[in-house]
Amino acid sequence: MGDTVRAGRRAGLAAMLIVAASLPTLARSQDGPAETEEALVIPLHPSTPTVVQLPDEIVDAWLRHRGEFLMEVIGQNINLRPHLDTPVGTEAVVVVETTAMRRRFRLRVVERPEDAVRKIELPAGEALERFGEARQEVLPVVPAAPAPAVSAPPQPQPSHAGHASTPQRAEPAAAATGSPRFDLSVNAVVSLGFTALDIAGYGPNTAFQPHRALGVRLTGAPRDAWWALEADVGGEWATGLMVFVAGDGSRLEVRGPLLRAELGLRAQVGTKWIPTAYAGIGVQTHLRHAETKTDVRRESMKTMQDGALLALGMGLHYRARDVVLGLDFQIRRGGPDGYRSVAALWTVGYVLDQGE
Image (tube, rainbow, N blue to C red; front, side, top):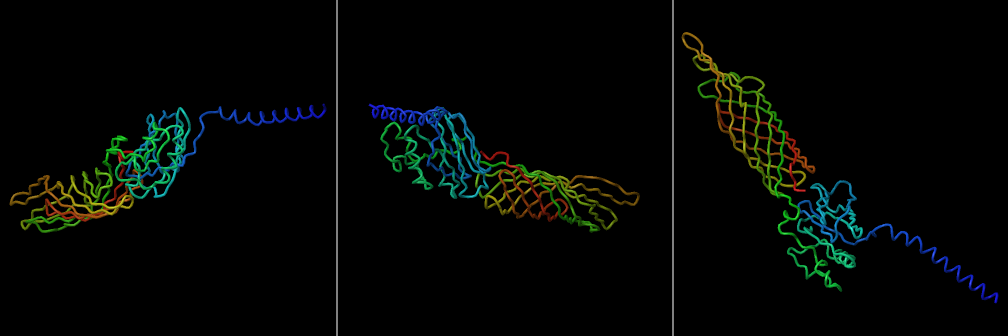
């Protein structure tokens, strides 16, 4: 009888221990949606906008990084793109909380745009883990054309088979995020150099002066293109008058190009350090003060003379995200007054719209 009582007590104690051990687990399971650790790695490239589509409405999302990536949440979609100067191989973690669960996956910057994913649709429920494992095996190589059935592992649930395929590449890419394919920047231009004039019918007295210039430049270029269009407007002021004298004693004073408008084409290579070559044409105006000597008196007249010019140059620019710094050297030649100029230009620019 005593043995039976002791055995019953031991059985009751064991049952109480089991219930007590299970209570914390039950409490934790009611805190909220479970966070799914995914093996999914999404390849990104700065020139390729990437859209991640989740099956449920996104409640919250955050990006664990050091400022190398941009993220935008719209409905069930997450728009992702690394900054232009983010090194290849940089990784980050995205945590997304939906109405059904919490998910986490990794981002990785790849070297070539064709290795990046444009659009990826994440499946729901049990197919998610298998989907991530399959994506990890095939990344970072992505087929050039959409081929969902080739690289997709067979799924036991037909309703998720379409989602478990290799991510499709959106056509066109701009439609997936609404981003343009054109970079537009505005730049402040400061210049120092030398100006020389040669006026027919006059001998030079002071035909060479240093100058300074200020202007504004608007630059537009297709994304990742080797060329860009530039439009410049500005003014140039010589440090002193350029003076010419005719044989009859007439005197001509010229200020040089007060106003200038220029349109040019720039060739460029690179994305961070950018060597450039430039060619442009434009128009400018000179302020002329002429004093004509006659037998009776001297007559004074001020006029504005217009002329065309050709500009050639080369330089080096540096782009850090949406800020562009530049140093250019240019030579100009044209009219009026046999205009010639050599100058160094410093530019500070800001990209108005990168499509991110």
